[in-house]
Amino acid sequence: MLESADRVLRAIEVFHESERDLSLSDIAERLSLPKSSVHRLLATLIEHDFIERDPLTRRYRLGIRLFEIGASVLRDRGLQSVAYPVVKNLALTTGETCHLAVLSGTDAVYIYKVDGASSIIMSSRMGGRAPCYATSIGKVLLAWGGDELFTRVVEAGLRPYTHNTITNPAKLKAELEAIRFRGYALDLEELEQGLRCVATSVRDHFGRVVAAIGIAGPSWRLSDNQLDSFVQAVMTAGDSISRNLGYLPDQATAATGS
Image 1 (cartoon, rainbow, N blue to C red):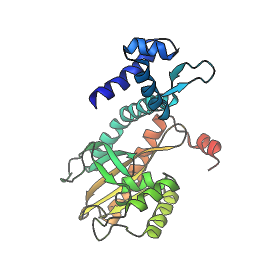
Image 2 (cartoon, one colour):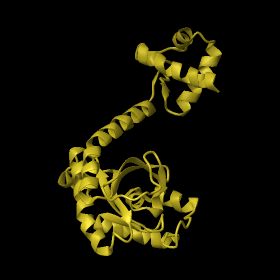
Image 3 (cartoon, one colour):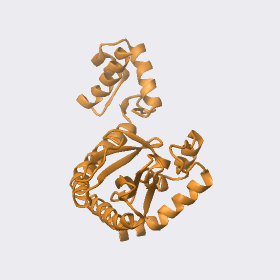
Image 4 (cartoon, rainbow, N blue to C red):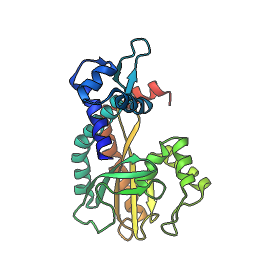
């Protein structure tokens, strides 16, 4: 298994180190492998769009999938460097735990977790996952994730984590519509008993929702009135990160027509 992974990586690196495109013989020579083995390896890489083969010249070149992955890495690095000071400041001003998360599959993955002066112990952690439908930060990502994501989440099952978890698909759909309308999401003890949260979206320069930022704290402290006051704070923070990522609301609206 490790040997196969090593061959895949070496095959990709051959293009990075050499000309723009290579023949089968070129690649086999550089990898010191039989042509038959290299042909099978390239066929697998082509299937997953990591390598492309020109039908006219029969030469191989790097595929679009590598560009997509590279662009994603650069985007996420940009997001993290821009977002951290904002998340930290939000935790400082509210005194509560603040999170930044991105979508991975049907889960929200926490990129940052910053505790405030009054933070309580909670299960979230950097690199940890939470179901999209049961957290405010996840519901933001789900609300702008499209119909396909919604279907996958529902088909995977809406497990009840507490008695407040939304487990009815129709109710969840209505909740997501409300989130899109008002611009923020609430978690009223839906994942953890005694924990309430509020979150909003972070957009890139295309206007796409690429992350969510949220505030979390104990229910006894995050009353309805306190949550209302945190709505403006979290939306201001989300807008700040979005602007630093190049998001311009007027231009994005004109481009998408929404």
